[in-house]
Length: 180
Ligand code: FES
Image 1 (cartoon, protein in one colour):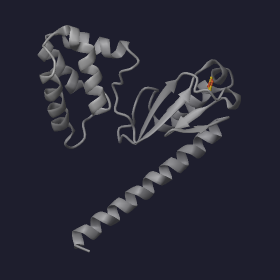
Image 2 (cartoon, helix red, strand yellow; image 1 turned 90 degrees about the vertical axis):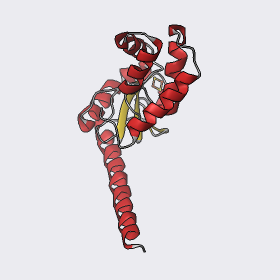
Image 3 (cartoon, rainbow, N blue to C red; image 1 turned 180 degrees about the vertical axis):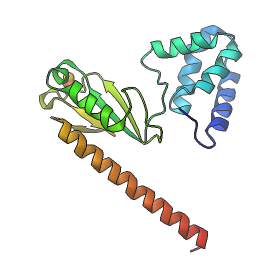
């Protein structure tokens, strides 16, 4: 995933600050990764490379550890976060179908983020609403009984919202250029 404008500088700044607070000891690898994720929202490759060099652990080991633990995310969170429940109740009545519908619609796999960073997609364990399975959580809003048609409807409304925000942002930019 390519970095956004200014993101590289932000990663370097934050990781430098974090590393100053820890001894260069491989025992500190997990707390360092946790803090990096807390500050950056995910673990970019650049951050893992910097950490690997500083504490003298091969980059491949840092990467393996980050992929091993569920708590770490290697892709940036999308502006809109879509979580598909894969608990037993949801799985039994179409959770996988809902997940695949989102994957097709977004052209990404679960665990990934769209290149424009508008959407991220992940599978989650039971969210406690089994009576309305299959369940999807979109930006903290719970959607129940989700079918592929409902996936299309949800995506349409999210895309419409993004398009409207982009239009507003462009209009604001134009006004600022004109000094209005
Ligand atoms: S299994 Fe999905 S809400 Fe419980």
